[in-house]
Image (cartoon, rainbow, N blue to C red; front, side, top):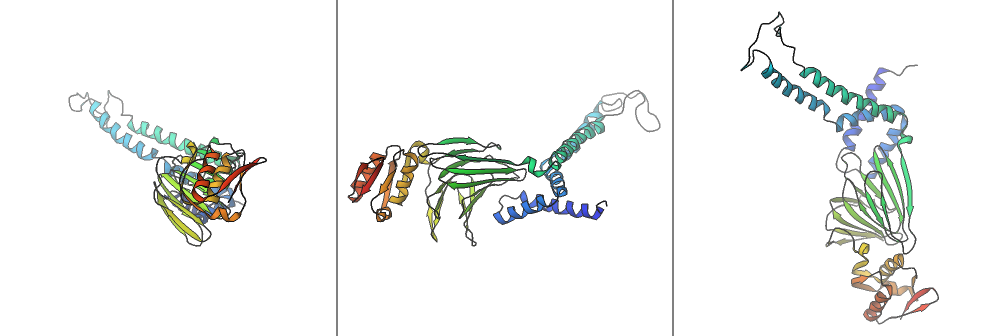
Amino acid sequence: MMPDRQDFGEIDRQAAQWADRMNRPLQDAEMAAAFDRWILQDSRHVEAYARMQGLWQSGAMQDALTAAEAGAGAAAGSWPGAAGGTRTGTDESGLPEDGEAPNWAAQAWKQFAAFTAVALCLVVVVSLGARLLVSEASYRTARGETRDVQLVDGSKVRLSGDTRMDVRFTPWSREVVLREGEAFFDVAHEKVRNFAVDTGSSSVTVLGTAFDIDLVDEQTRVVRVYRGLVSVDAGAGRQWRLPAGSGIEVGGGKVRSLGDVPGDHPGWIDGWFDAEDTSVRQLVQRLNRGSSRPIELSDPALGDLPVTGRFQTSDPEMVLDALAAIHDLQWHREGGRYLLSR
């Protein structure tokens, strides 16, 4: 049985609504999930959305009309009988007998036909199945290792040590799951697809910007923005928009604003960590990502001690000396580890 014409009309209407929604500056996770459900529900949804998105993104039709108007003016000036020219005669239609009709209309049609061909190709490709256009990859680093990753959209990611990340790109979304560790994202700008990072307890959504996410522990997330605007969603209606130069720490039911985020990339890339009333536990975790010899605390309570300052994480023994001086502690090597104690 052939699908009802009204079915196609309704699908096109829904596709147009989704094209409008997905081209807005920021999307939340709920809307993105709803879109994924809708697009995968029916292969006709994929085709209709591709058509609407092609029309949304392309200015080919307007370009063709503009070229037609420009061509009309140029052709009028070049006809015999136009200003500065002579006309030998006309036929009944009013066209010149000795000259050819202006070709601006044909040129405009060719331009629009080319656009239509591209749009049709897009529909054909997408109609092969959304799953064929899905790009998935997983990345991880070992302790003491960093890694640069270039994603298929041109975005760049620097992974810190002991970090795990999964990536899933579709024609309508860019999704990253940061499962462990820390990563600095330099996101390629796109008008259509948001770039979303899920950290488990919160999510970050952007279109094109540079930011850093640190998974401090199972609950605590630290986000710092170095370019553009970032939307952070911690669930339960807790949302923030962070401009460049700012940051936020969310975890354990608490929120702490980080008002001064200098530079264009995080300090850890250069081997430094800027602590601002940070716990020793967090600093030790940072050191452990880059050190082949782990640091352990003899007493878990030591992890609650606060520290402020700039620490060279590429030299853990120097940092341990600083911690010992600040809080009257001591450290020593024990087997394959460093042990920090009172």
